[in-house]
Amino acid sequence: MARMKAAIFVDKNRIVLDEKPIPEIGPLDALIRITTTTICGTDIHILKGEYPVEKGLTIGHEPVGVIEKLGSEVKGFKEGQRVIAGAITPSGYSNACLCGCGSQDGPGTRHGFKATGGWKFGNTIDGAQAEYLRVNDASANLCAIPDSLTDEQVLMCPDIMSTGFSGAERGKVKIGDAVVVWALGPIGLCAVAGAKLCGASVIIGVDTVPARMEMAKKLGATHVVDFKAGNAVEEIMRITDGRGVDVSIEALGQQATFEACMRVLRPGGTLSSLGVYSQDLRIPLDAFHAGLGDIDIVSGLCPGGKERMRRLLNVLESGAVDLRLLVTHTYSLDKIEEAYELFASQRDGVMKIAIKTGA
Image 1 (tube, rainbow, N blue to C red):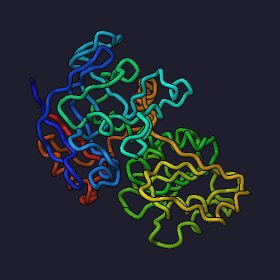
Image 2 (image 1 turned 120 degrees about the horizontal axis):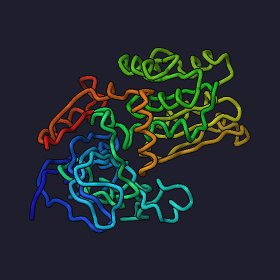
Image 3 (image 1 turned 135 degrees about the vertical axis):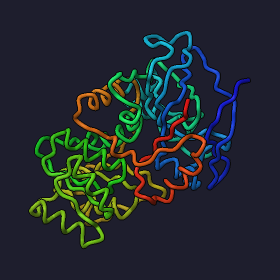
């Protein structure tokens, strides 16, 4: 049986490059030869044992590649075509999909832990940090890449761009809104860009890393606040003349940022939560106005599927957003263990790493 290289979860704090069989595909699937992928913050949660997956699983959920083989029932695509697939791969016919929430088309519960929504790659099935990837329900999930766009231009589409934009979409950002994005990692930066596209006129980015705050300005932030330089909540209230923001986007996944996002909301504002939390959250009584503040708290999982990817590619092709600046490093798949060490340590100004298979 033909074999391939793949980044495999072995145990807590151990993801290693090894070999395993190239996936077999069924009639609804496609086999993708990966050309470029990347490492996500969620992969670091897996590495640290904060999110449980099966030992032996190939990690990764951000694929860019070329169709190697198509299942007999997959229509509208051809072998040799450049494609992406979203990190979330809904079937299109589950109860969640039919209710309009394909992101939650998931496998249910395993080992006493509720598997997260429709996230399958690198979670419940083998993922994209490999030379080849089996894409389930390919007709509903593959999307052709326009010839005008490079792998690096579209690399954020499967997860980071889709997730960040969804923070603004789920928060229902409108023309003229004031928005704060708390934490300017890759997802937070994409949330800044999404808020701008939705029409926000005041966009405040909160972080402490100068390079990230400068990048936020390039993507649409009108103000940046260094949370280590003073009281960030007070500064945001000052910027908004005491009114507060219409939408707070939480992009870190910690109690402190979640709580701060609540404290800067105007009456009737919306907290849009994108963070992946590893502990229970506490809602402070005063910030929640004892439950009487008309505050909305919404959460969301990265929207996936063919139509979502098509729309994101349209945004990139139009030139409205250029996310290549998020790709700060490039490694070959052969050096992915080294790339994991860099990304997990967050040194050398790393934002996102392009992993090239060399295929």
